[in-house]
Length: 274
Picture 1 (cartoon, rainbow, N blue to C red):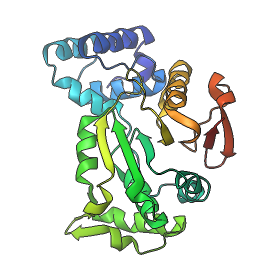
Picture 2: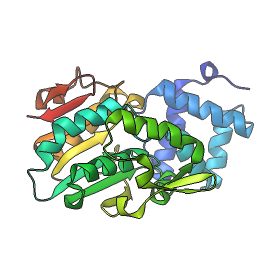
Picture 3: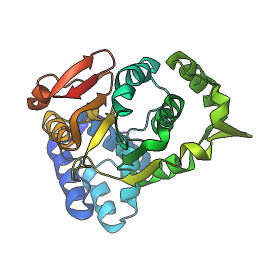
């Protein structure tokens, strides 16, 4: 079994450059320790002791890239995760949103959809969901299929319901889901204002005129250069006075773009474009 410490940065750079040249996925500016751990984990699962051997296999078996995309994607999420964040968004952002006849929201790095549907529930309870278009994007096509299906393990329901109550939900969580044996799924009316699509924050362009952008706990896996690029992307994709919400473990401190955002609530990592 190989360890991360045994894998040189040079070999990792060669591997990531090859991925970009072969398949167009750009992981070259992801946090090196994070991406290295995921490469080593895959090597150990496949039985490789040399990264060059796994690269040779990747060259000759393009479908293996699908496996690596799943390895490199971080999909840790839940409905109403960090309930206080959704409370702050509701109290601070929703009054701003309701002043517009049509509202555009981008959830970047939406994973399997739990955060998107949480936002849909909150917007529905505020009474403005019918005026909203949510663009939910992720680099991982497989995880987007799960998001569109919106079916989750039944053992998660209690946790999600607790989060919903902590957020300050005005109804019953059960009003928004169907239970089907070992799973529960989100009701169809919550899906009608959501458009799921693939989008790569590293290489793809802007979504114009967004009033609210959420990208939570995605950029902790990026290096400083890539974080700066993504902040530029969000700034260019947002209306004046629009809102940005990032993960509670992330910060805009030390970035050139920080002068374009003022902090509205540091605990919730909620910022406004100025």
